[in-house]
Length: 160
Ligand SMILES: [Zn+2]
Image 1 (cartoon, rainbow, N blue to C red):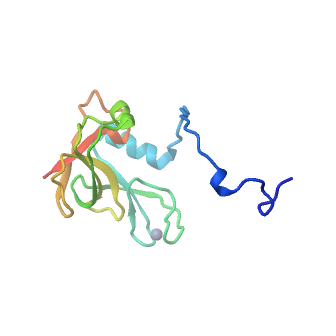
Image 2 (cartoon, rainbow, N blue to C red):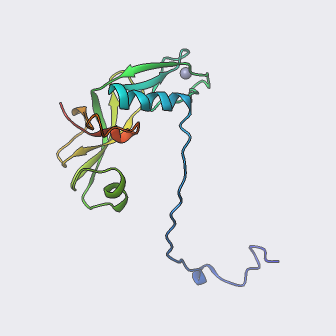
Image 3 (spheres, rainbow, N blue to C red):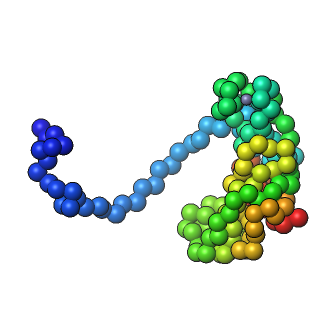
């Protein structure tokens, strides 16, 4: 048995190995997020969960308030417009985004957007690299036959 003070190797002897994992999984969205995703798909509406105790509105919805741990029971419509609060520009083609969810060619902007009526920020994409904090944006919805109750039912946000 080795203990940390009696390991035969020094830290300089440690090495890393490259590996690649692919893990299929099914994510259970729960009642709130399921209802919000169905609203995206069927009604092109963005829903948040509103805490009755402190009025904080979470987007995406969650069933417990992180501030006061109250059980949240109310969904409210937010947006669809919002304000860009944080940004980073993507200048390279990312394999995962290209395969699963991006219709955008680089450069594009990953932004945290505070939708009107929301207390939290939603991460999404905006075409191009000319977005700045404070810009007003609105969703560009996927076509009716392309929406599938996922956040990518909003293809991206664009300037108002
Ligand atoms: Zn609360």
